[in-house]
Length: 219
Image (cartoon, rainbow, N blue to C red; front, side, top):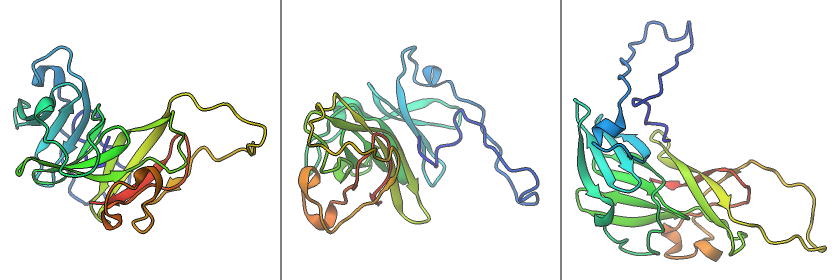
């Protein structure tokens, strides 16, 4: 879930004794998304709060909804009505998470790639790829978490490597490798599996790990 999405089910935690005189926002009550979406089999994969306070939820099989002050859901764009990307590869479903960047502008993640969805212009553009060059062809990467750091204008994702790894050959270096480390976007050398468009517009994640936290680009 994204950093900005904190008002749906999880309580906000504050450190006792710190910033005692600062005003605090009143936490919202939990929202029953099955009731809001009017379906018992709701499959929400991401919730988001826009800078103007508007709340959104993306359902894996139905699409993007907006929640009003009474927690009623209104369909913004259906999954089968998502526009095709204007350039780059097609969207590989499922959509796995969403974060609001500005009014009507969202970053969404799918298998291997992230996209910018503009619901006012109804456009979809590939914005980043989080598949490292060294990933074998029989593996894929999926992230169920994307976050937006508005102060530094950065997007973060946490990819997971999925699939069956190839057998280890005798000449392969078997020294242990780190399970976790940060990966950073590099706009200058978009090569390999992420080299799908203009280098100036194609940040890519570097490195390898089964689970990582990556800086995947600027919003």
